[in-house]
Length: 113
Image: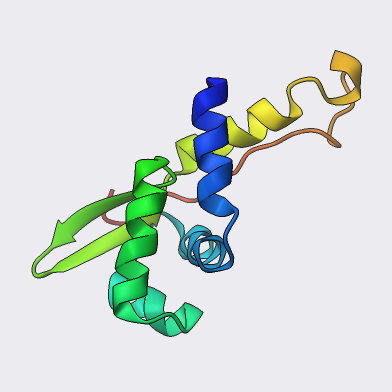
C-alpha cells in the first residue's frame, strides 16, 4: 500500500462518525448493510451517513452495490488488511513475533458470493 493511500485511509477513519460506520460494516461482514440500517446502528442521520460514506468510499475503505432500490455498503476488507499490514510490516524490527503482529481479517464468505 502506498503512503498516500495509507494517509487517505487513516484520515477517513480519523473522525468519530466515520469510524463508527466503518466498525459497524466490519461487524456486518461481507454482506454489508443498507445506508438506513447504518444510520440506525450508529445513530447518524441519513444525510450525514451519505456524506461519510462518500469520504470512506474515496479512501477505498468501503464498497457499494445496488440491490433493488437499496445501496448496500460493505467494508473493503482488502484495503483494511493492506492498511493493517502497512502499519505492522516492521513490527518487532522485522523479526518474527507471531501471533503478536499478525494483522488481517478473513470474514466468512457470504451465502450470496
